[in-house]
Image (tube, rainbow, N blue to C red; front, side, top):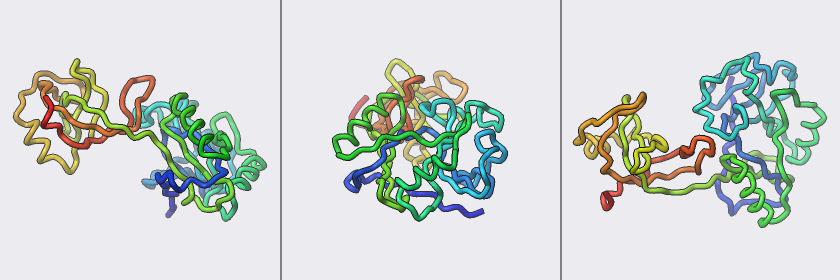
Length: 257
């Protein structure tokens, strides 16, 4: 079953007011169509408690998340079971509906799309850029990974804007994953804050990391001496674990040791 997923812009200069600003759950984008939830990679999730009483005639787009939606979804993969009561479905909109977003919200309410594990995504209406910025900061303060802005009068999902904090930090290279797909980065004290993929950068990484001897190991990594510094781009900190959200390797700081 072919499904076209909405591609959210990150260009904040395109914000259209008034808009609904909603929290960005840390989960996976899914579409409810023909009685099945499907993610953007084509994985289908059937007969989940969050959809058992949902009509097969309605088509929805939303986010599948675990617990509060404030933690790293990929750390919760072991909880992705059909009977997990903490696995929830937040409904964003009707799928590919030719209706202004404000009208879709009214229809979703009439469709009674709530149950214990399913709800319409909450949001606040913003009528100025100052309100957009205020609500965005409040959602970040509450522990969500960002916000999504949905212009109320617009029909197309292409008008939705995803806003996540994008920051950089210098960290130590503490190790390399045992499958050699990522480097472990963290503090000079040895606290691992995340893993950065090195797929596509293996040659560069092996030249710099390969000369070090292994000084220890964890379940995931071979540990090396703390001598290399890298610049890492990330989307903020996961409050409960202190780990970075979506860390990406930007460059090696050969000017730092």
